[in-house]
Structure formats: C-alpha cells, structure tokens
Image 1 (cartoon, rainbow, N blue to C red):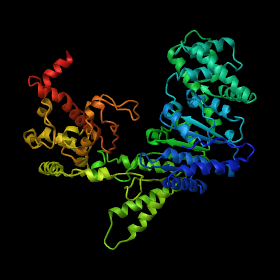
Image 2 (image 1 turned 180 degrees about the vertical axis):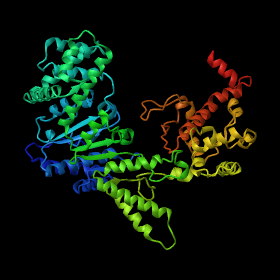
Image 3 (image 1 turned 60 degrees about the horizontal axis):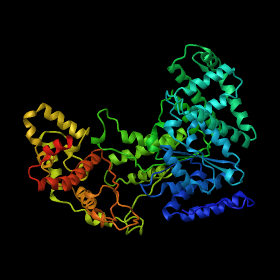
Image 4 (image 1 turned 120 degrees about the horizontal axis):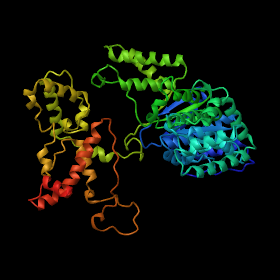
Length: 597
C-alpha cells in the first residue's frame, strides 16, 4: 500500500483531497474501483446505508479506504469542516490493525486502543479536534467495539474506564468525602493497577484540556452537572443518590456495581452526543447483528438509536457472509420460521431507513417470490418482477464474487480445483442409499444433495439436523428396523479406527483436500515451515517450503466436525499408525493405556 503523507498545508484542503483520492483509487483493482464509485454515487443520491458483501479476500478494507477518500471530498463539498469516521469491529486488536489500513493520510489521528470504549470516546474526540495541521484535523478515525461500547452489562467495566471517570468527577463541585468514597468504590475491583491508571488519565486529561484551551473540562463538567441533577436513579436524583450512598456506612458490592454501570452509561451518552459521526463503517457486521435488533427497552437500544438514527450519517456495512434470500422446505424449522429469510429482511429494513422504502421493498420481494412459485408457460411477467427485485437490491448492496481465471485474468486461479475434483461411484452411492432409506421408512423428504457433496458418512457427523432428528425419532419407535441404518456409507467403521486402517474418503471434495494437505508429508511437521528461510531445511522439513495453512469455507455445521475428525485421523494413521504396523503387539487400546500412564 502506497503511503500518502500530508501535503503542503498551504494548499487548499479540496485540492489536497483530490490528490489523495487519485493516489488511493489508483492503487485499487478495477472491480474495487467500480465498487467505490458505486458507493459514492449512492451516497450522493440520498442512499445513506450501503452493504458491501464481497466474497472473502477481495479487499473490502481497501474498498472502505477508497470510500473514505471519496467521502472526505463529498463532505467538503457539503461544507463540513470536520469529517468523523467511526470504525466498528469485533475487537480492539482488529481495530488497531485495520485503522492503519483505513488511514487516507499517513499522519491522521487514530485513538489509543486503551480508550476505544464508548464511555471514553469524549477524550479521543477532543484530542483529535485540532491536531495542528489543516488536513489532519479535517479527518478523525475513531474505533468502537460493540460488546464493550454499546452493551454496558452489569459490570464494573475496565480500570481505565473507571480511572477516567474518576479524574473527571473530581472536577465537579462535590464534597471531598464523596470524592474519596468514589475513589474507594472505583478502586476496589482492581486495586493494584488503580493508582497507575489514575495517574495516566490525569496526565491525559490535562494534555487534552490544554490542547483544547480548557474546552474539554468545561464541556464535561457542564454535561455531568446537567445529567446528575436531572437523572433519576433508584427514586432519587442521581446527584443526591451518589452523595447519600457515598456517605452511608452500608455499601454492598452489588450497589457499587450498579452505580458504576449507571455512570458508565452516562459517560457513553456524553460521548455519543459529542461523536456525531459522518461515516460509520461496520466491519463483518454479521457478528453483531444484535445492534440493529436489540430489545426496545434496553440501554443498548437507547444508545444504538442515538448512534445510528441520524439521517445525515452514512453507514457502510462490510460482510463476507452471504444472506440466503429463500429457503427450501427442509430448512424451515419446526415453528415454521425461516431464519435465513428473517435475517435477510432485518438487514434490508436497516438499509432502507424510511418506512415507505421498507414497505416498497417488501412488496417488490413478495411479488418476485409469488412469481417464482407460480411461474406458468408463456407468462413473462417474472422477468419484470426479477428486474424490480434486482434494482431494489442494487440500490443498497454491492457484491463482487470470485470468478474463474479465464474470465478475470490473474485475480483468482481455480484451475487446481477445477481439474482435480473427480466424482467417484461412492459419491453417488452415498446419495442413493440415504434417499432409499428415507423412501423405505416413509419420511417424505429429499436428502439435500449438497449434504452428500460436502460430507461423507453423514450419520457420523450430523448433529441437530432435522434430517437426522427425523431418523432418530423413527428408529426409536421402530427399533426392529434399525438394520436399515447399517450401511458403510452412513457411518465410519469403528474397528478401522481402532486398528489404524485407511478410511475411504467417499467424497470428491474431501479426497482433493486430503491430497492437497498431505502432499508434502505435512503430517510429520510440528509447525508450519518459515516462508522466508535463513538456513536450508533439513530432516522432515526438507522440500516442505510450499507447505502452508489451508482455509476452508462451508455453509454446513457438520463440515468442520467432519474435516477435523477425518484429517486428524489420517494424520495420526500416517504417524502413530506406522508404529502400530511395525509393532504388531501394539493397538489402539494399549496405546491409550501407554499415553495415560
């Protein structure tokens, strides 16, 4: 990635942004540029929420960086003097890594990960508001982690949160005894690190306050005084409750924790009022869908409503997880709820802010669904319904999928997979035997063919699947027919495992995976060989330079279980199995005894 340094501060910001945009967009591949241009077009035309659902590995973070560069120009055209970009991701480590990738200028301010909680963001916001450089102070990058920012559970928070709150509460006109008791209450959950945390945030507060010419302290004291004197807590004004509780002799850990939670919520609310984000980037947002579906009466809902429901705020959602827009009968649960479709509609409702747009989309999608179910000869109205549905999605979602090397140059090379997958008779036999079983016991359903394509020995690896649940219920009622389940394609034979015998893959995909994983005798390696070697490899590491980690994706819950079991067993068979073969007196059972002893 090309580093973009701050330009000459004497050059107008608009001209600097033009140069930065050209540099950043120039780094992107054509399909990434097209996505950035489409997002910019949607933002300019009033669509404030957009989902990028590109497949894994196609550079969604780079697209987000390009979007920030475009968006900074847009906000300048809209006469905004400060662009606030909030980056939401699953944890602080990911935030620290990706914020560096999202910076459109090399020296843009990024807050310390220790202050990434929402209750502490007021400090970061004031620190970044004037960094001394015109362009640098025009853009702020702030990160949040949902579980620690919006979900203020019944907990004491971190020692850093409490230390910053204490440093600010000290500056209120409170009785000294009250301040001393607040110190004791806040210190109790982490006494060892407490004095160091207080000292650190005292320095941080003074630095920020000096930098803002006293505005930071003035703002925080004003907001806290207003809230403490108007907010009701346990049937009292909060300021009165704090005074009475701190001066009382009957304090409990539970009541102290409740007070800390209340104060954390207040500080989070102050941060939100000051934050006013222009662009929110939600990375892998499927991990925290609860933000858009939280309980209406919860504190989280109050915080998220204030955060998301500003009509001028643009939101960019990143997710590699595709949403199924329909389900088969077999995939709908016993309560007749289609979870996939419900999630899809929840996301579409979030993307379409106005109620009329939500209703319009539901009507379009319902019309398309009806046409799919009732398609008739010579009825071409399905074409119009399909076009309307596509346009409705196109106005909110951008998606790029992997395509073959022949279609897209060197973007993706799938030639190895395309040429290596060979279907064997066992693949077909597995499907036929399962379907025969279902037909013979009058279970009126078809086995999903993708089950068989994804997993061999499905009865060994299925868990909580409706198909297996139906079979279990049937054979509980008809135990005399259990022999029908005795098929080698249904189950792994235990005796083969006990004697370290080869297990037939019975699956084209698994066969390809086994050949790939073990091609360099990788079962003998205790760790992945270095990608850049300082010395020639010897022993089992010789000729293993190309061995690396393998990432697999599947839609089915049973696949990771199957792969971990069969690949691990094959690795053990190729190592421990050799010992057993060379020592006939050893077997599975006495090896276990040796291991335990």
